[in-house]
Length: 120
Image 1 (cartoon, helix red, strand yellow):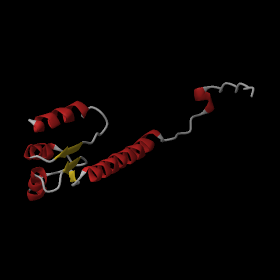
Image 2: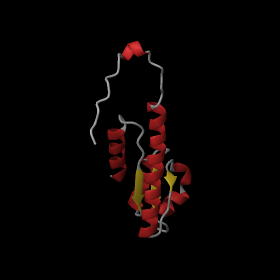
Image 3: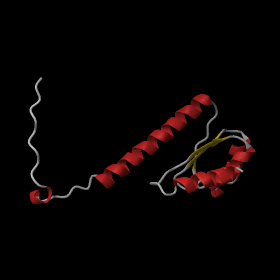
Image 4: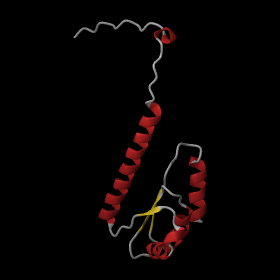
């Protein structure tokens, strides 16, 4: 069931820019969804729980990067680290795509308006 949910989410974001997923879980039912994740996605199984055991026994089947955690503090630290990494990578991609400067002849864009004086 959760595997189908992951597929639905992937389908809904497929039209957008490359989006990545972070999947957290610890139960046996979290193994199947982890197999649906793609390269560039992340799976965060709780260490020494069924999902973690299955992922470790079947590492070649899991395309997502695996980041294990043991307690709430570690979960928070790793999750925030992954979100920060994704944000940095996406902002670098945006800056490359949007900052392609070209020289535009003055005649093409017309004269710029005069600046207005601002009293202070």
